[in-house]
Length: 207
Length: 207
Length: 207
Image (cartoon, each protein chain N blue to C red):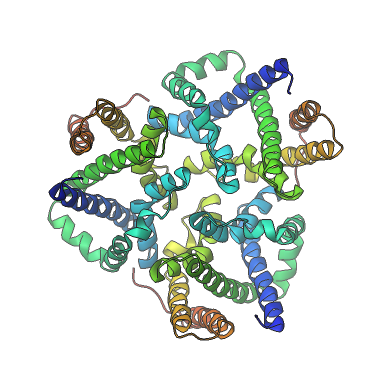
C-alpha cells in the first residue's frame, strides 16, 4: 500500500508538472500569436502529448487525460485566461518559475513513463526510452505545431539526457528492490537537480 | 432501423465531406508545388487523418478507409487529375464552393466523431473532443506537412469552436432522447450554419 | 521453412536498410546543426518511424525495435560518433553509397510492410499502401522534425512510386503462388533497380 501522504504529494507534483508543460505551451502560442483555440490546442498537446504517445506505443487505455478529465478542463479554462496568466507570471520573474516547474515535469514524467513501461513488461533500455518519450514528446509536438525545429533537438543543454540518465538511476534502484516510494523520489529528484545544475553551470552537449 | 433514404443522404454527404477535405489538400499541395505523389499524400492525410487519429485513440478497427477503400481510390484517381480539377473549380468561383463543402465536412465529421466516441463509452467532454479531433486533425496534418503553422491555430475565425459548440448541442439532443436521425441532422446543420454565418459576419476569436 | 542462408542474407540486408535510413537521419541532423541527442532522435525516427506507424495502424505488437533492441543500441552508439562516420563517408564518395543503401531500404521495407499487411488480412490496395507507409514515413517524419517540407512530397523523382509499383509486383507474384523467397527477392530487387534507374535517367513525375 502506498503511503497516503505520499500519494497526495505525488498528485500535487503531477498537477504542477502538467501545468508547467501547459504553460510552456501558452508561452509558445503567444510568441506565435495564436488565437485562443490554437492556444488551447498547443497547451493540451504539450501537456498530454508525451503520455498519449507512450500509451499508444504500449497499448494502454484509458488515457491519462480520459481518467483525469479535470486536468483537461483546467487547461481549457486556463487557455481562456492565458494572456493574463502570462502577464502575472512575468511579474514573478516567470522564467525561473517555468524552468523549475518544467524540470519537475521532466523528472516526474520520465520516472512515471519508465515505471509504466516496466509494468508492461518492456526490457530495461526500452523502458528508459519510454520514460524519455513521455517527458519530451509533448515539447517536440509543441514546436512542430508552431513550425520550429524542436528546441530539444538543437538546444545542446542536457534535457533528454537528464531524463535518460535519471531513468536508468531509477531502474537501478528498482532492481535493488528499493521501496518504490524512495526510488520514485530519488529518480525524480535526480532529474530535477541534474537539469537545474547543468543549466546553471551552462554545461553543453557535443555538436 | 435507420430510414433508407436518410442513409443514402448521409452517404452522399459523407462523400462530399471527404472530397471537400481532399480538395483542400489539393489546393495546399498546389500552393507548395508538390509533385503528383506529394499531392496524393497530402490530400489523403487531410481527408482521412482526423478519423484515423480518432480511431487510434479509441482503438477502433478497421479504419474507415480500409472499409471504404473506394474513397481512397477516388482520391488517388483525383490526385492524378488534380491540376485540371482545380482549374475547373476556379471557373466555378472555387472559393465559395470549397468553403461550403468544407463546412459540411466540419459538421459531419464532428458529429460522427462525437457519436462514435459516445458509443465507445467515453464521457461527454472527451466525446466532444473526439468530435473536434475527427474534424480538425486532418487540416492540422496537412499544414504541418506543408511546413506552415496550422491555419486553425492562428486564423481567429471560429472553426474548431463551431465544431465544439455543435458537438455539445448534438450531445444534448442525444441525452434528451431525440431520434438519432434528427439529432445528427440538427448537430451537423448547426455547425454548418455556425461556420458560414460567423465567416460571413467576420466574427473573430480573442487573441 | 525458409532457407537458412536466405534468412541470414535477409537479416544482413535489413541491417543495411535500417542503417541507411539512420545515416540519412545523421546527414539531415548535421545540416540542421542538431546536438548529439537531437541527432539520435532524428536518426531513430527516420529508421524506425515507418515500421512503427505501420504497426500502430495494424495493431501489431511488439514493435520491431522492441524485439531488435540491438538495432536501437547500434543507432544510439553511432549517433555518438556520427560526425566521424559522416566525415569517413564523404571520403568514400558518400552520396552514391547513401543512394544505394537507401534504395535497398526502400525495397526491403516496402516488401516487408506489404507482406505483413497481407498476413494481417488487409485487402490488396491497403496492403500496398502499408508497404509504402513502412518505406516512406520515416523520411517524412525526419523532414518534419527538421522543419522542411518533406523531400518526398516535392522531389518529383520517383521514390514512393517505385515502392508502390514494386509492392504491386510482389503482390502479383504472391497471388501466383511464387515461393516467398523468390517473390521477396524479386519485389525488393524491382524497387531497388527502379529507384536507381529512374534516378540515373532523371525521370520526373508530373507536377
